[in-house]
Length: 104
Image (cartoon, rainbow, N blue to C red; front, side):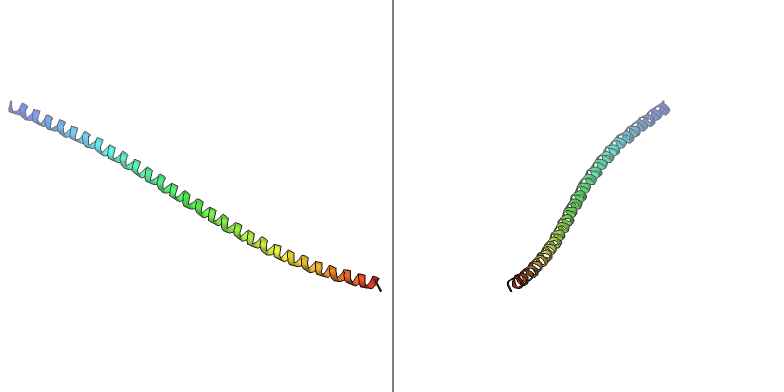
C-alpha cells in the first residue's frame, strides 16, 4: 500500500511538473510572439524613418541641382545678352559708316 501511495505521489508530481512545463512553454511562446511583433514594429518604424530621410536627401539634391542649373542658365543668359549688345553696337557703327559714305 505504501508503494502504491508513493507511486501515486510520483505520478501526481510528474503530472504537475508536466503541466508546469506546458504552462511555461505557453508563456515563453507568447513572450516570443510579443517580442517578434515588437521587433517587426521597430523594423517598420526604422524603415519608414530611413525612407523619409532618403526622400528628404533626394529632394535636397534635386533642389541643389535645379539651383545650379538656374545659376548656369543665368550666366549663359548674361553672356548672350552681352554678345547681343556687342553685335548691336558693331551694327550701329557699320550703319553709321555706310550712311556717312552714302551722304558724301
